[in-house]
Each structure stands twice: as structure tokens, then as C-alpha cells.
Image 1 (cartoon, helix red, strand yellow):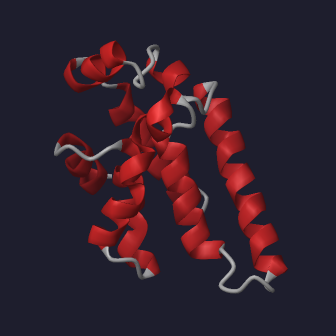
Image 2 (image 1 turned 90 degrees about the vertical axis):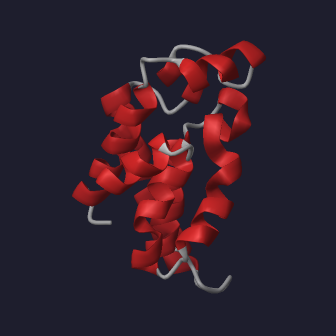
Length: 139
């Protein structure tokens, strides 16, 4: 989790922080992970699905995702594992929606400014929680 905090506090978004921690374990270069996850911060830049959840779904895909379109078994397993993560995350945090978790909308000009300067950093805790949950679930 130390690495995720370093990534986040160095300017990474929530999704980048989660995916990059697990990337190399699953054969993905950390620089590529940063690029892939870049657009998913701030609830995919819309205040919608939390970047921690998006990053976790990517990690789960790296472990369980189908390598061919014909592998419907792996695709189904990946879907179930993703649903499991979402269920547990939502039970713990009461939402998977970025703006609900933050208490403001980061997709607005005002919200984006607040996200950069806010001394209350809920994302720190959410990133740590998401990584801990992934580890508890065996990722």
C-alpha cells in the first residue's frame, strides 16, 4: 500500500494508484498501467464510478480475464470476481460513485479545484481500502 500512497501523492489518480501497484505482478509494465488508467480518475472524469473500483476491475481482469473471445468461462469468472469486489467495496463505503464518496463532484470546475487542494483526502483512504480488499480477496 506504501507504493499506492506514493503514486497518489505524486499526482497519480485513484485508478492509476491501484492498477500500478498490481501491474507488474500480472505482466503489465507500470508505465503502460499509468497510461491505461489515466482517464479513469475522478470517476472517469464524470464523478461516476470510483477510480479505485475501476482500477480494481482492471486488476481482476489481469488475473481472470479471457485471453480469447472464445473463452467464455474466464469471461464469466472475471465478471463474478468483479461483482464480488464491487459488492464488498460498496458494503464498506456505501457507494461506488466518486462524487458520493467524495461528497462533491470532481467533474465540475469547482470540484476539480477542491480535489487538488482539499486537505481532507478521502481518496487516500479509498485507495488503501481498495488495495487491502484486493489483497484479502487473493489478488
